Length: 127
Image (cartoon, rainbow, N blue to C red; front, side):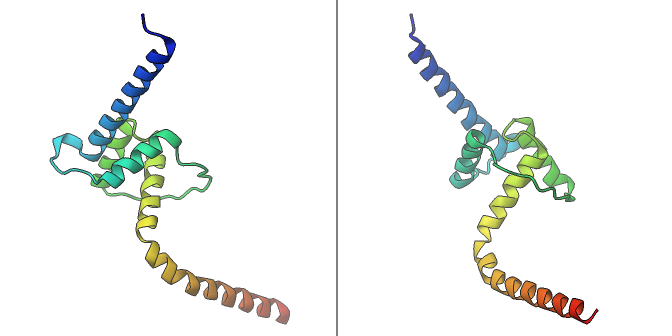
């Protein structure tokens, strides 16, 4: 007879196997031979365990049919709970992949914001 500890370990092992299968299916739908990067697999597995945290902001977007098909495939295999969660995940991935770009542009954005604020203060003084 199996102890509770052994049953729990076996269940966890099956969950791990299921998550790995989900990642493989999600990364390579419809039997494609292309293999997803280990980094993406790890990120999806991490997401499956932890969720995406606080996502209180709403962003509307339009996707082409192929992108939506890929997002829906991931939702269908329960790699993500919703289209929104999948889109948030891939937006975060894109931002992280473009980290150098953001580091270059953010100082300029900060200056622009400061100039706008200064201009608005000047306009309100004259009124």
